Image 1 (cartoon, one colour):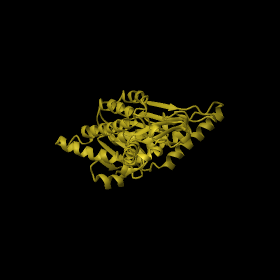
Image 2: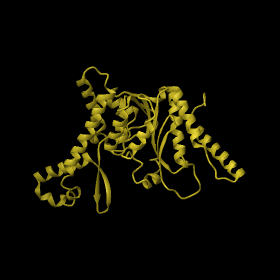
Image 3: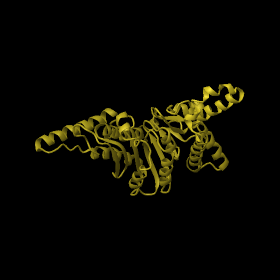
Image 4: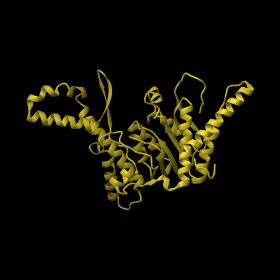
Length: 338
């Protein structure tokens, strides 16, 4: 692998070659094909560890696959059951530094908070590597690190809370701040023009009597949690606590600003961080270290290949090969199994 770029095409060809060899072996012996996925993944993980010398945790999900995401019943997101995988895969790692490769659409703030607590009870210096995408609660997860490395094509996302609302037509997701804005708009409109009440009557009951306050608390909680992490970890070397608090507040107010970012799915990439935060975050461009970039992307591409060829939709793994896998039942020809 030395001297060769770990491109998607190179990793893809390694998986294709392993598949061809497994099929040929199966035909010769009359046994089911057995593709040694672990051997390929371990070679890339070992190469990364040889470069960094730091324990590694990989948290990746197949959320780009709409079919798997739907079939998993939202388990493709960060959920409380992930704690089992985090505990299992970090058990054999030594305390101290840790690198995390993260690829996730986000999920539960509460589950993310639990995972961060587990990691921080053992690891004192955590670097997050984002090869592609870490949105919503996954962005919050990354902001709990001491440093973040973003590939030039990678993106984070807003951390404003999303509220689940049940209607007769089904379940919808709505930004907490948008719900607050609508309530306050109705209040202002009706106080100056009560005759407009009939226009608001079909809208307001949908949200329920307590939702306005729940939205305000959800926004407050998400800001408080991330602000606390930033003060404790990423900004911990700043000598004055008030400076740490002020910087953390500025960072959180940007990531949680629904009026500014306008969409929860909006990308926040290196250029956006440079323009809006002007060096406040400890974020590095992964591409600036070619050797590190090559190794990180090689590991990431291995798991993309695994997802494309197996029922797996979530993998949590360490550099020692210990792995926690979630997968769905699929109908069709035999596939790779992690």
